[in-house]
Amino acid sequence: MSKEKACRTCHKLSEDVKECPVCKGTDLTTFWSGFSLVVNAEKSEVAQKMGVKTNGKYALRLSR
Image (tube, rainbow, N blue to C red):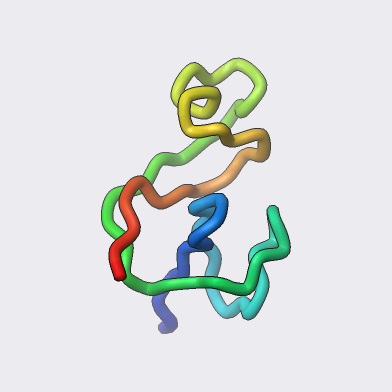
């Protein structure tokens, strides 16, 4: 099982990728903690505060 990687640009969590599926960034890290699961990005206040426009799993904090 591989570790999920977080995009340093938009914080989207993904497995087995070399490019972020949301912002197409290539700066990914396995050093993250906490996550938010966005189910309805259009109506979610948390998603709005995070700047998220796409449903999915997002890292809350990145390190390194």
